[in-house]
Length: 68
Image (cartoon, rainbow, N blue to C red):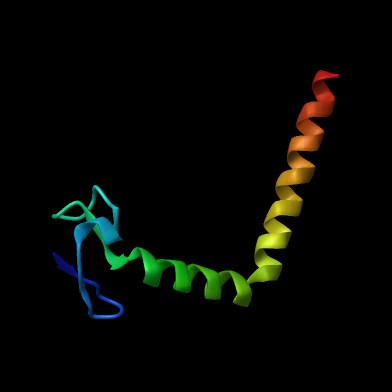
């Protein structure tokens, strides 16, 4: 049993992602809270992720054309 640092609910450890850096081996936030946070972060930063994908697409396209 572990308490989520975000929603403060006590949940089973299976509700938490693994994190080797933490003393108990699990993340601070439960999977549900992490999912909500990541979805909100993506919605608020869509342009950043689109720009990042565009840069990667261009970089890999240039890299792959060198081999052809």
